[in-house]
Image 1 (cartoon, rainbow, N blue to C red):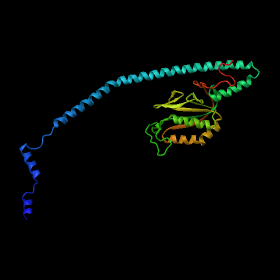
Image 2: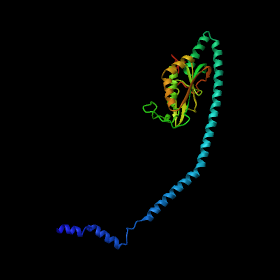
Image 3: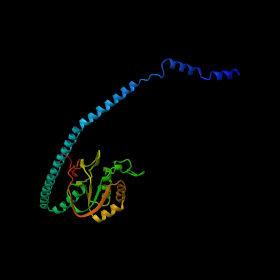
Image 4: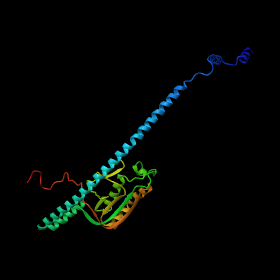
Length: 278
């Protein structure tokens, strides 16, 4: 009974009683350093304002630098185009002189035909003939999502952009379909050609290309088109379509593909002739 009476008379714990007494003597609630919070918020605000001002001040300079770089790229591209025209003219002159020299030999026609076949196969000479043209272009928007389990998952094409791997696949499938010569946006492919990417740009033999991409394959147009469409190439184009990338397959009766401008033989040598021999 004495324990129950003590609990009824002293229901408040001693620790709470001491805290209540201390709060009464100090004048109410504990003081909180609210001014520190205000100073911190002010500092953050000043930092954000300074950063925004710096970004605003640097924007015109960045835009000017970007414009200057674009002008330089256009200038150098135009210079490269002029040099390619001169190269084609010089090659035509060399070919004419070579044909004139071959006519003076007894087996000139046979050698000329063999040389023409080798130039076609290696990309060292221009070719003319019927062709299949596969055109692919980036999606109108860049927010296409990749499907689960798709072979292109994780690629830049998740945003609907044509990648170097797409052009590699299409070119390889056209070779497999029977193409005799291929060019992408006028860049002739050879056994030494490289199709790579640098950032969002696609490079063919280190020259940047821009969409739409025209993959032109010279050969028997009807058979190449049928073999390409019925094989893995046609299936791959359907995959591209799922990303919003558009494509078309057409045939042309006559196209001209230029010779490769970057073909350099590094290791080949004339059979039976050693370096330094006469």
